[in-house]
Image (cartoon, rainbow, N blue to C red; front, side, top):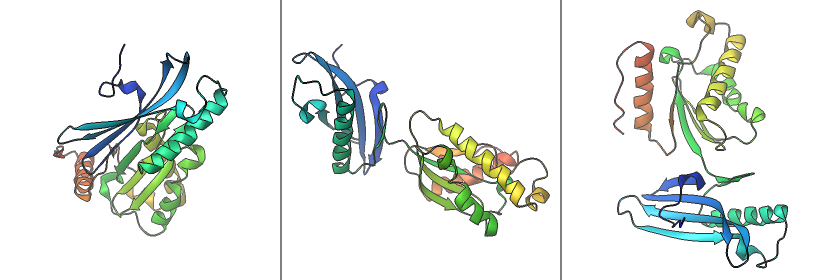
Length: 236
């Protein structure tokens, strides 16, 4: 099967981002080299203007890092490719992470609220959350919380996570752990939430940047969900 840069299967997609109307997709794959009769690691960067759909691409391979036809060993090849990717991604200004099987930049903007959107995320409780929300990185050190914003009625996180994780699982763990600790550390919370709860059910997530207006509309939407009112159209 012939694969061109315009029809690379999505299974090889390792990172994606959009900046100033330019979508950047980075693919990584192993391909058979006819001349040297061996598998080579390849990285392909495809940039597309989301309005004009004009596309350009750069193909990078391990072959530029070593002597062709000489097998340096799996670990050495992996290390060369990692150094290569890091240098490449530095020049294209993307914070690419490396895993054992590829490179990625999966950045999630996540928002959720206290039950009924009560304005209680302040004082000592807010101080605890500033630390407690980041405790997830102790159990999952390959996670990175890039941004943490605490408002009195909602939380906004920007998390970078490997593709092996589901964002719902990670957010679920964060909410469960912090809810349990909040009820333990702050007994007065039980007077507001007499059931074993603290956070509203669900959350909002986006894989691209969201502005404050979208966040505000989600916060209002989740408040209506908690009170049994109709859904709100985000207008995406």
